[in-house]
Image 1: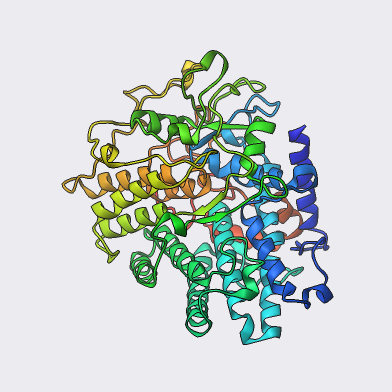
Image 2: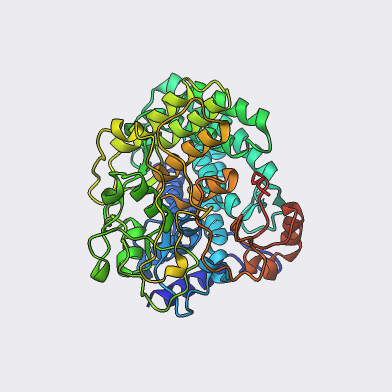
Length: 540
């Protein structure tokens, strides 16, 4: 039974994160290599990098499906549903009283915290120590670890806000840092990694034979890592634009100048074999019967007559057969009555998406809209984003959507009203103010907000299935106009209109790290609940 496995895994995480009296213990993998093993044949650094890569989006087919359960808690039942890209099709025996209705479940919202420290921060720390021991020859390995750490921890701070980060040491009581300070550290770490990668490429070439057998993303191709590092820097720069506009522009222009993802061959994808490693969404959707297309996704893809709908999702089944149907979050239901709705078109061996060139084009388009130097006009970069998204292999069959010309010239299609065939109380009619009227075709004469909504809406589609990044961009911009939850059971803690802003800190932190988490809450600037915005989230 999947619910039991989820609960068991969460307890194990909490125990693993709190086995030292009076403070949380952020452990390394107890099943990993010993120190003696790590000193042999570059295994010290390589195996740790492999571990970090495999755990950003948990993908290993471990006993008891622990990684699948971790992914479900960290992503499927958090950002994936908060973004509106997906909807939960399991009531979890409680008639939908759970995260999807803002009745926050501690075992769910706390899972990401301990998992990240165990599988990202602790391995990174050991790479840092190992690199110091080896010396200059390990600079490339440490640069990779820095980029992976920033990728992983950006996602964690964007869930919780303040974190123990800047002075991290495993098995130690680490003070919380503000999200502002964490982001500034991200930029410093990325700049250092970019410099190390650039020097390595110049001195020894783009291919690292030492890292090739351990690097699950690029097989030691440092030139691809350099593009990824710059692209990640661009993503982070845009995230802070509402709180540090000058810094955001500086970081973004430097990233684009340094070289970013520009074609689908550059896409950052974790390949899985469908056996020892797998795409967890496959099991969550089909074995657990737990996730389906989201109502907002249905509205956009149907309204825009988007040819990607059949690449990303499957038609509904049973009495709903012959059409695509998404679930509106916050729906109250029992059992798995929404299981006939559209499943995800994903297989066990579908690659796991970290970052794509399409996203980078949309980031650059927004920068150009803000009059930054992004290597093109906002119109051209926006259209390149759509074209790149259409030509990206997507879905379980990894097929392409084809020519985007007609789609880009469509200046009349708008998001479609939403009808829930199970419960008309969940409908979003054409007169609802939560239904956007944004069209596809670029319009230079439109105002900033209109064209920003146009960019972010297409970016939101292209980001799928990375619901957390889509959720973060919605929190930052308010776009696309995600349907609010049909039922808000937060007892007033979370605004229905502004929607959920973050996850509360884990209960284990209050139990084992009370003084530091109290300081973390003070850095948050509001109560520790889902209604308090993060530092970069300025919507009010």
